[in-house]
Image (cartoon, rainbow, N blue to C red; front, side, top):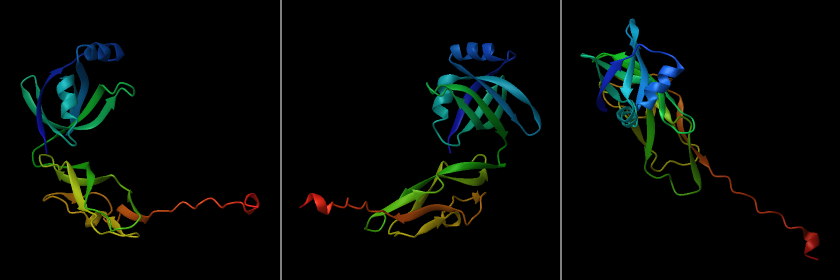
Length: 192
């Protein structure tokens, strides 16, 4: 779990024009909401936020004009062509509070010898974890699995304090037999 500290400024201007001015200053418009409080419109430093969002499920410690708030990214809007941040929605959390997040599923090991394919039915797993102890990912071993084998959500080892938030019988990974491509049939007439 990564914890990043950012200094935020409140903003009073809204709309496209204001958002463009903010982005021209290398900053990102954002909204902080949660716990029944009124949403707070803020501006965050663009480069630092971009670096922080590279870590999955990052916990942000925001300094909003002297007040400190913990938040996790809920929605991130990026420019579809250039990839820069356009807007971020942040959800406030409290230490000890349980949150539902998605974590990436990583595999380790080699499949059994043979022509097999590993299909990732789910690339992420929805889990519930304490806001200050969110895992970045979970790892499962695929060593020795053969065609027809599958790994269910309940088979994946989770870190302490983390529970599944999806059906435990959901298929996460499955091993398929590779389909061999048939050789083209030769026309008997061309051989004569």
